[in-house]
Length: 82
Image (cartoon, rainbow, N blue to C red; front, side):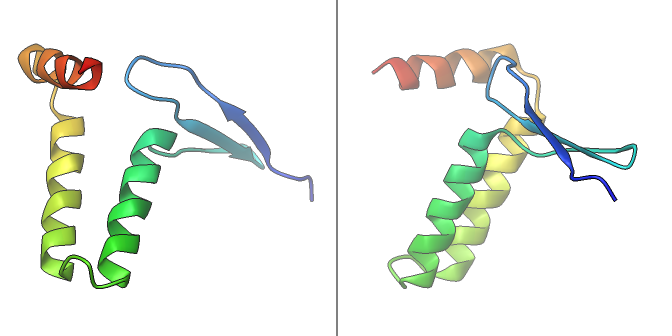
């Protein structure tokens, strides 16, 4: 069995990781999103925020990422510049 091959794709809006093993390709969410999910999970695990709040934050983040509304993307880019 060969070791899995990892590659980082560079696309607008993040850097997803593409994992290829035995002809099966799996693409993760962008690394920046994974860091957000880990941070929210850590806050919930440390009981700084409640689990339902963490789930709502994560679900909202996923839903915003799935939409292709240009106005929302521009708003997000404006906030990231501040």
